[in-house]
Amino acid sequence: MFVSLTNENFRRLFLTFIMLSCILPVLIMILIIYNYTVPVLEPYQLDELRGTFNLGIICMLLVQGLGSLLLLMWVNSFENLTRKMEQVYSRQLHTATDSVEESDNELTKLNTIFKRLSDELQSKIQQVNAHASEMQQVTAKINTIASTDDLTGLFNRRHFKQKLSEAARRADKLDHAVWLLRFEIDGLRNHNEKRADGLLEEIGKLTRRNLTKEVLPFRIGRNDFAIILSGCNGKTTARTASRLSSAINSHKFKDAAGLSLGDIAISCGIANYRKNMQSLFNDAGKALNLAQKTGEQIAVAPAF
Image (cartoon, rainbow, N blue to C red; front, side, top):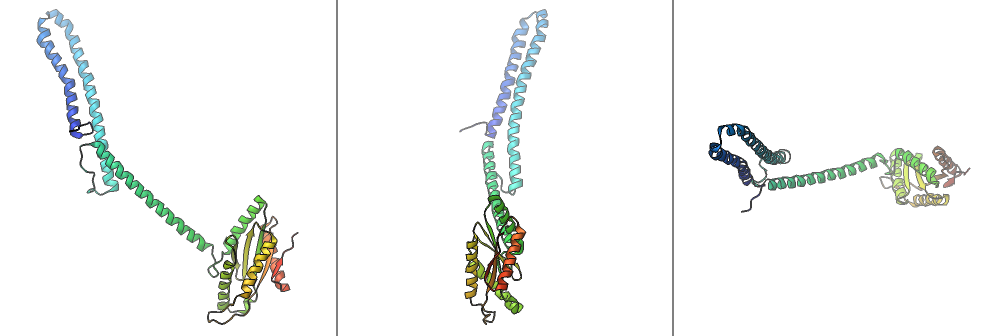
């Protein structure tokens, strides 16, 4: 049968053998000295050697006793480690009934405990990662809700200010163009609140449907919409406004009862960023007012 110091019973037998091996030679030496050496010595010789014999025996006992004590301390520390690990395992991770299987081999016990602790840690890490993923999804949903207009589904005014500021900073840093398109629905005041809300909701759907993912549409007022276009020129912005205007003009708007709302049109104003974000917003607003006054669908703010 295989035995080693990791086997508890064998370890205790081995410790007992070592201690006896340390003490027995000393006892045999004492027996030989007092039975065979002392009787043949003269009294004066015995007096001279007695101190030396006693000191030698004491030194041998001290050295061998110290070695036995150190060995005993090492064995106890090894066993204490196993017991403490079992207690931690039982107290922190599992119930008392789910204990480590009985074994005389401490290394087997420790290996089992560390393996289960490692498995438990991996399980906790997976749970934390799952919770973190859920939190990210929840946070993303909250951010989407906080930045979205309830009626139209477009981004709201708060998100518009943030994105326009970011676009302006990128334009200053990278020296590329940023255009702002603002538009309003013509004659929205001619409809009652319920019909106007339905019209605004449908306009929001059409706006999202006719823009690419890179273009950001916003509702920044009751009848005030904005679109930020980065890295493009005036012609691209004008085409975007024309495409959106044509889609709205050709759409058949109806109220909740299915009655036609008539022909619906929008007026658009576009402006180019000129190192001042507030000026960009105001210029697009002036161009929008110009388009409404002249009856044209699209007006461009003068570049100066």
